[in-house]
Image (cartoon, rainbow, N blue to C red; front, side, top):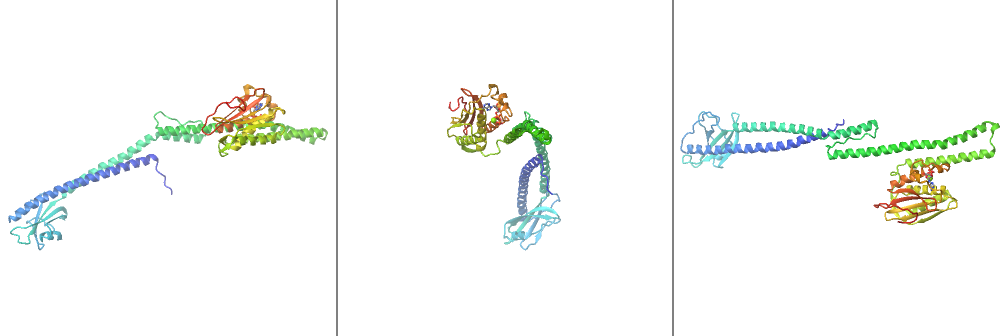
Length: 472
Ligand SMILES: Nc1ncnc2c1ncn2[C@@H]1O[C@H](COP(=O)(O)OP(=O)(O)OP(=O)(O)O)[C@@H](O)[C@H]1O
Ligand SMILES: [Mg+2]
């Protein structure tokens, strides 16, 4: 079974509690050890004093009196070299260890040990004494001090430390949790907004940003909002393209259907049989309409393609791309003369897409230009990049339409009798914009149209031109 990972706020609560716990345990342990050492020193000092006192009494040949039973009274005992011992009457005996016997035998000066006497903890100091009465071997004096009070104090202190520490740790955990909960509230808002978008598919619903939101949250919300509006724009563009395309596809389809219906009806009624030349004309019409439909579908597919994702951007010579487009245009419209004057310019771009864009300009020039005037094509290097110009001697585009002809399906009224669907320049604009460039039309001196494509060299801006083939 896979365990669910705790939420961020719970994890931060645990982390802050753990950090406080480490600090509290460290400080408490240090304080407790310090106190133990201090109390132990006090006991050791007392033992020293008491043993000196006992030695004095012993040396004077006096009997140390039995303790009065008070908890503070130390125990006293004399240990002899043979291990036997003598304690004041009525006093509990101090256990004699091997080390104590070593002291009594003068093998060591003194020893300190913690022992249990009648289940009470004592610290025992055994020290060798040598007086006239003791003979050459001497003997040892033992003093035992009750450690209960020291242990009780240490126990109480430990308990207080444990209690305050635990309260501190719990408080740190709860506080950490509450603080992160308050801190993460703006994140919750962002999550709620994202979930709302996911469930309603409403890309126009923006993630709210409040003035007191932390910087990180504002940035997340801002980038989500830009992502949403980019998605919305792209979905809107796709929707419009589908609507426009289905509308435009309907026209050639209708005339195609009409022609086919006409021929079928003529076939089914022997009396209304078409004359062979009418039939031939209708078939040629159908063929032209099918070609039109084919062209239209190609263009719609081209426009629907994401301009950024299909082809790799590489360094390329724009003159070579334009020459290749001209070669294709010559095979498409062999009756039209194309004059090319191309300067080599290296730019970075997508060869296929750029060639399709230039070919669309050449198609237009060939379509509208008179058969006896050549189409002039030039490629020029610019400080800012490169410029392609395609100039014809056709009827020109009305000034009012110069911008609008780049919109999808827009055709100047005079052009409506010509084949085409009005997508060519929209494709040009899409490709050129994706390359960071511009495309526009200008009237040509002496009549005709000049179509321009300007593409930046990597890292350069663009500058406007006015005359085809000339650099300004
Ligand atoms: N060289 C030109 N001379 C005159 N008019 C032009 C020229 N180029 C474009 N236009 C005008 O701009 C309109 C849009 O051109 P665009 O290339 O987008 O469409 P199209 O050529 O009509 O159809 P498609 O290119 O989709 O086959 C044309 O219909 C025409 O009115
Ligand atoms: Mg065109």
